[in-house]
Length: 202
Image (cartoon, one colour):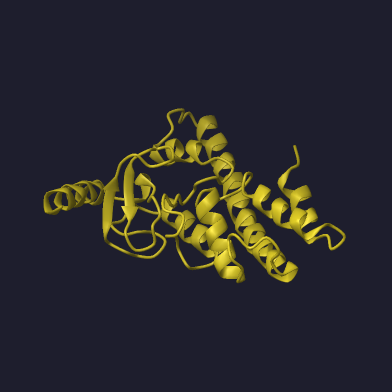
């Protein structure tokens, strides 16, 4: 099975058939897809300027989409290295019990679904790398009350998400499943109450 870097080389290789280059970019998302496969694909297509169903996109646009994906992957891999080093030091210092960030991080190792978007058409507009930088910054500071990506305060608890965890606070502005560790207990409770209010009004 080809790894991310060999797939990326195929995307860039002008000697490869265009269909293979597009297919290789899609396969890259099996290795790294911050919003999930479908939402990340939709995001890359819209930012690079070709349609999700376009079977013969401009090769320059394909490479632009790959560039954005690679930059985001570099941001996330650097975070994972720092995370692993921190946990190693904590274990050395006798802190064996992982915290809530560690629990969340185990579910996103490798970068799949880091900022999960259950609706593939609703996701942040900013470049992927910027979204991940904002998310990482939120994971490294005290919990807050807003979405770490867009600053939106309209969070609603959703169930039956196509992801693990299968429920949690979703930002109604940018569509991400907000990691629980970045929110205060009060914000999490508010998101649950917001769902109850939506059910009552429906």
